[in-house]
Length: 94
Image 1: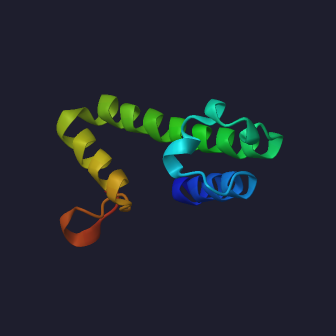
Image 2: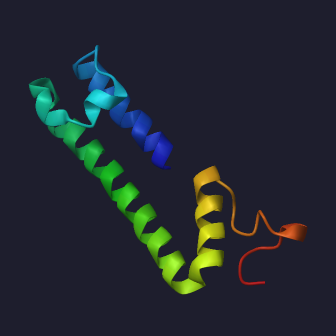
Image 3: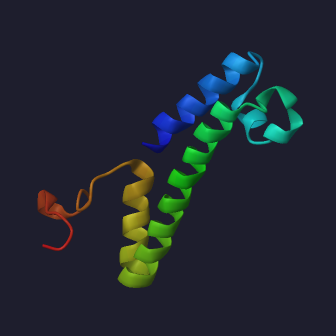
């Protein structure tokens, strides 16, 4: 979901200013052409998705403890499903 939204933000930004790079988009105030309500909406959606991911990562660390929290973070970073790194392919909570 996050990657799809990130692609949407970059594509829309490049429609507004074709020469923009992904790094340029991180500093939209440097580009007056990005002062577009549709772009700001999509960028805000991306920020919300990222905030939820960070909150869930922090919660997993608090609830699961250091070792299990690290395992959960590693799965989320590689796009794995819950329990994917366990032997037997079980799901979390089994």
